[in-house]
Amino acid sequence: MEYPLVRMRRYRKSEAVRDLVAEVRLSPDDLIYPIFVREDGKTGEIPSMPGQRYQSVESAVELVGELLDRGLRAFILFGIPREKDPEGRVAADQEGVVQRTVRALKEEYGDEIVVITDVCLCQYTTHGHCGVVDEETGRVLNDPTVERLVEVALSHAEAGADVVAPSDMMDGRVKAIREALESEGFEDVLIMAYSAKYHSAFYGPFRDAAESAPRFGDRSTYQMDPRCLRQALRELELDAREGADILMVKPAMPYLDVVREARRRFDLPIAAYQVSGEYAMIKAAAERGYVEYEAAVLESLVCIKRAGADLILTYFAPEVVEWLE
Ligand code: PBG
Image (cartoon, rainbow, N blue to C red; front, side, top):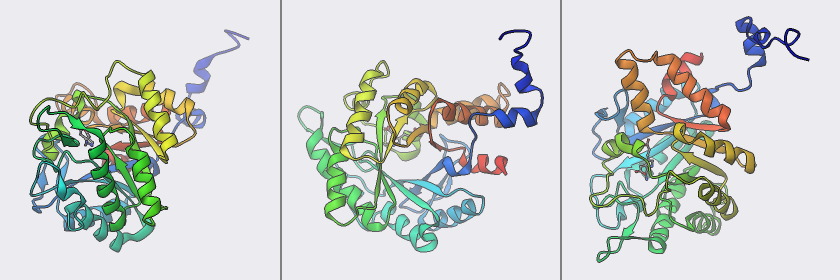
């Protein structure tokens, strides 16, 4: 059958029909909200990410309570420590800002919320790289970094994190973390692996926010080359085999082909991270009146879902749950 008997516009004749045949929907259940917690307790707007605020341990607990009332239940924590050192030792400290926040959140809200922690060293190292750096060559050393990441992940699990999310892109870290969690009695802790994490210019605002920009060189020897898709599939495959529970693609919008392909090939939940630069672009364009804010945000998120993501990490989450009400 074809035109005139087939008329595609019939599907679009009213909002009710459009809603009936819609293929994906946004739900607060699918959103993960990133929270930046400062050890020095300073709150206030994050200059590079207008609309986002720094939290203290106490204000984070308050914020999560408000968002929980609005239906948002999953949060990922990024810590901004007072002190850094070359090996990022503080990252695994039980009195560190992330560990304290996890404990406070779980104490207050228990299993009503999902607490996810970003497992990385870059906010904690003086040089700003995501791992242990060889002093002579300046290269990030894989295996010594994995050892450190295991300590960090364990410290988060011990504090009560539901999910640990390694974002460093070292080889073998998922396996090492999975085995350590298993042997230390944290077999219920999920691993959400930043599996296909690209070396992206779209992390700019985050690095200012988290004070984690590398002091020398860049992250191109560990994060993925934007020109590669097949390599991303291998990264995803390896993390799945090493015991990841959720696979992530990051950034989202410029990498929807990767999200699509990940969805096709794996039966694990797929997460996509709409990163700080994506947030900033929409914000800035809307502020100038180039795009309509709410419509552009919702479209960006729906399209990430349509590409195949089950979960989306997004700075827009609090506004979105309000709009969806
Ligand atoms: C830490 C980390 C980064 C982001 C999440 N975890 C920064 C980076 O890799 O440079 C980026 C998040 C964003 O841009 O919103 N490794």
